[in-house]
Length: 253
Ligand code: NAD
Image (cartoon, rainbow, N blue to C red; front, side, top):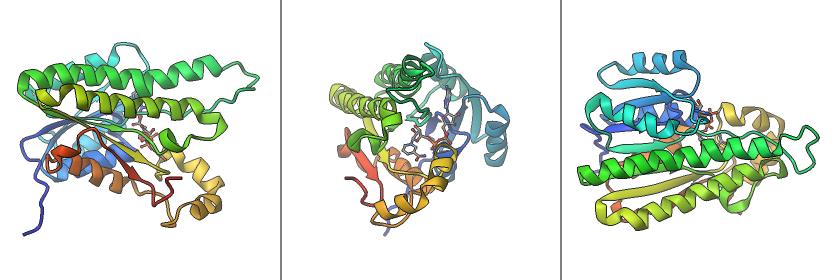
């Protein structure tokens, strides 16, 4: 008999769930039977369209600007109000703006602050609320979307991005070690290039170099990240807690 992912009866919160990797993850989790909260940043219409596609009994849209301090905590609390609980938190929302050391516009400090706020501090705030909630409920799972950039570094205009994702991996491992005895499981995934809005322009401009760099020959489809998240969320691999799973077609180094 094969292994079937059955997520029926579980409530999941996916941040940045209205498009890209997040939307693929929402569809996969809902397809496996979960009820999903589709968090969005600005585009309520996009999130609402996804909720209508899945059905209001299966999905709920919730907006929050994770660039605002405190927004992550408020979002988690609003999410628990829907069904009285959340079983799995998927921290997927993220930004990747550019700035170089000699950027004349002076946006260095602002770019670092914004990136660390959305990609790391808001993730930590959501994790904190989730841990407190999971402890009372006897357990739960956190899955954080990091990046290959955490391991191999990124281009000079995206050092802040690589640093934020390295922080996410260290945070994930700390949660796994610190709260395993409370039933809290924590995993990260680290994709290389994924074909989404975030990467589209770069992928178009550097298509040949990127294809040459990836032994498997192509960038990661968002659905493969979603499948990996669904597997980690299933409880089938509890002892992998703390792990970061690579998805990069063997382009790790
Ligand atoms: P995307 O730009 O399509 O989606 C990003 C999501 O984050 C959107 O839903 C957006 O609304 C949300 N978001 C951004 N800023 C926000 C804010 N201030 N408040 C609330 N929500 C906000 O990109 P994607 O490729 O689907 O990215 C999803 C995750 O995957 C990100 O964490 C990204 O860093 C990571 N990732 C992407 C790639 C890639 O090549 N696309 C590679 C590795 C990791």
